[in-house]
Length: 355
Length: 266
Image (cartoon, rainbow over all chains, first blue to last red; front, side, top):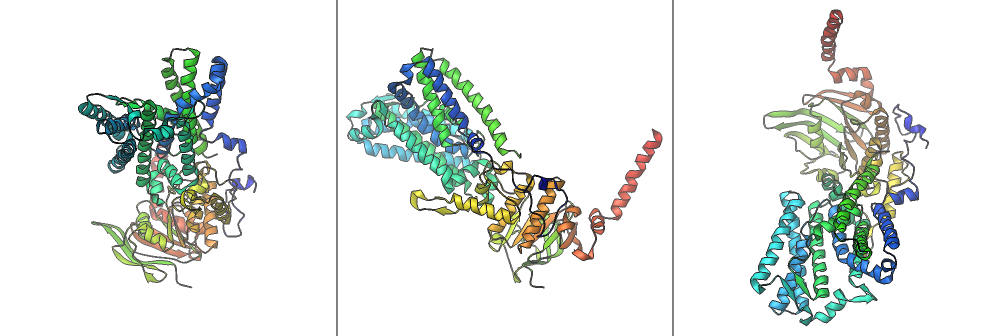
C-alpha cells in the first residue's frame, strides 16, 4: 500500500475496488516512547538530579541524601498518584490538603480525647474520607459545577471544621501523644517505620499505589473509562461508559489517599495539627502536571505523577543541601508549573492532530 | 427480492404543531446502499432519529425483519442490529484506535484483581476489522486524533459492524471532508455493502450519493419527493432534483442580472 493510493481522488466503488489507503506508518519505538505522557518529566528528573549531583555533591548523591529525597517525596507522591487519576478523568480535587488536616485531627481527637484504640480510629477516619470523596463527587456530578469550585468549598469548610471542632473539644489545634495509644506499635511498623536503612515505609506505600494506579489506568476497563471520561465525556456516555460513577469513584480515591497521608504523618510525628496539609492540593496538582497529565483531562499517567513528586523531593532537599535560601523553592515551583503546562500542550497537540 | 431488514411505512412525526415528517416510506435491504438526500431542514435528521430509536413516529409503521418494532431508545435499536454513526463519531481523539474501538465493551481476560483488557485481542480485531474495510492499520495504539477524517469514519464503521450492525445509518459521513477523503469514505461504504450490511447513507451531496447508491430517496420539507432505483435516474437528474430544478434556474437568472448590470455600470 503506497502513499500514491492516497492521492487518488476518484471514488472507487465496489468490492473489487483497490484497497483504501493505509494509515500512517508505525511510529518508531523511540518516537513512541517520546510520546508517552511522562517522558518530559523523566528527562526533567534526570536533569535535576544531575544538576544537584554536581552542585550539591556527595551529600545529595549519598544513600542518606537519596533517602531524604524519597522520604520527602513519598507523602506528596501518594496524593499525586490519586490526583493524577482524577485529573485524567477531567476533574480537580482542591480539598485533599484540608482532608489531611481533618483526618489527622480526627485520629487524634478519637484516640486522645475519646480514648479510642488507634485501629478503630484509623478505620473511622478512612470511612470519613470515603464519605467526603463521595460527597465531592456526587456534588460535582449532580450539579455539573466545575469540580474546582465544589472542592474549593470543601477545602475551606473542612479546614474550618477541623480547627473549630478540635478547639471546641480539646481547646487546642495541635494534639500529640499518639505513641501512648493502644495499637500504636503495629501501626508504627506499617506507617511510620524505616524499612531499609534510612528509607521510610511510606516510600513503599507510594510506589505500591503508583503500581496499582498504573495497572488500573493502562490495563483495566475502568482505566479505559477514566481516559474516556476526561477526553470526551459525551462520546464516552454514548458508548455506554458510566462517566458519573467513574468520577465519583476517583473523588473517593483522592480523599482516601489524603487520609492515608494523614495516618502516615500522624503515626510518624505521633500527633497532628489542624493546619497540616496546607497547600498540598496545589503541590499535588503541580506534581501531576509536571508528570505530563493534561489540565483538561483525557491524557496522563500515574508514573508521571511519581516523577513529579520525585522532582519536588529532589529540589526541596537539593536546595537545603546547597544552602540556597528555601524561598527560592516557591519560585522554582511556579516556573516549573508553567513550563510543564506549555510543554504538555505541545505534546498533546502533536498527539492529537492529524498528520 | 427478500424481505428488507428494516422498513418504515408512511411514518409521520409531529413536534407539537410542527410537522417534521409526513408519510415517509423507506426500506433498507441487506447488501444495499440506500441514499437519503435532502437539503437542511428536509427532515433527514428526524428520519434518522426515528430509525435509530431516538424518536417514535407519530404515525406509520416501523418494521424490522418484517415484524413491527417499537424502540424506546437507541440501545433497543442497537440490540436489533441497527447502528447509527453520527457526525461526531463518538470518538476520543487522545485515545488510541483500539481503546476507542472497544470503549464500553472491552474484552477482558483473567479474574479478580488481575482481570484486565485483552489488549492483544483488541489490537488483532482492530487490524482485522479495518482490513476488511480495506485499511491496513499498522499501529492500533496510535491516537485516533492523528487519523484523517476519512480514517476516523472507517474506525467508526468498522466498530459498528464488529458489534453486530446489520443496518448502518451514516449521518453525513462525507460532509466535513475534502474531495479525496470523501472518496475514501465512499469506498468504506461500498465495502460495508459487500459484506451484506444494509447502509443508510445520509447526505446532501448527490455527487457523493450517486457513485455508491443502490436507491435514492429524496426528502423535501418532510416529504418524499422522489424514490428511484439506481437505473431509474441519472446523476444530472439527481442533482437537478436536489437543487430543486426550476428554483435553481430562477436563482441563476436572478443572480445573473445584477452581475451584468454591475458590469455595465463599471
